[in-house]
Length: 251
Image (cartoon, rainbow, N blue to C red; front, side, top):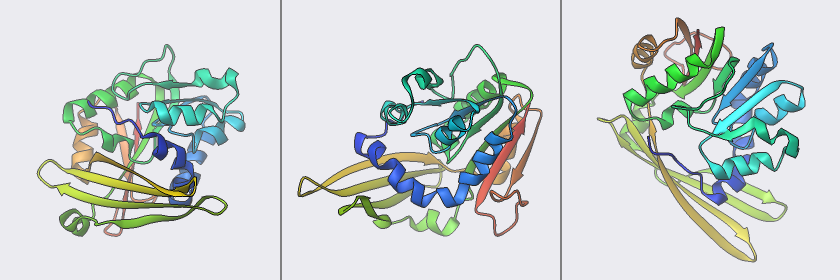
């Protein structure tokens, strides 16, 4: 599996962009799942700590892994040095701890960064082995929008604001779908004001999209004993209006 390192500027502005784009979507759901867990929690794809930091400050026994060194450096800058051991650079496929967790979460499309079936199974089984009996694993993917898959996106502005007072930040996104391999190639462009100049940086990455029964077959091939799939972050069942797959697996 090829790892995706977040460029420095994307890690730098991650919080500014996603606190606006995602906090009203999934923040309460994942944080509540962590808060109600009596025991240790692992966040896969911890990034800059959108859930992790708040959970840690509330006294929860949380750990985080991520494959991006740049993202981890941003997160560690928010932590006391004696808490840095909680965050390590590891991959979902082969991460290793000498203890097990009561809950493992992989928020915001983490599993979509794993394109190959064999790696997806490896990742699920590795998660399962790191859970205590009756432990839970929760992850999410989006329900594919067929119209968008066919047409793609073209320089759509998904963030236009400021990262500091008077300093503008804008992000544009384009997508190129590969329907046969179920891959969306996503192209990002960042523009921001700094030192009286307009700076830019580009980045692209592939995302593997999933359909409902594919997810079900995938989990049923894994070591998990049971699972449920919800249609949103409020626990409603899947229906024709669902835009999310919220998957809860149990050991």
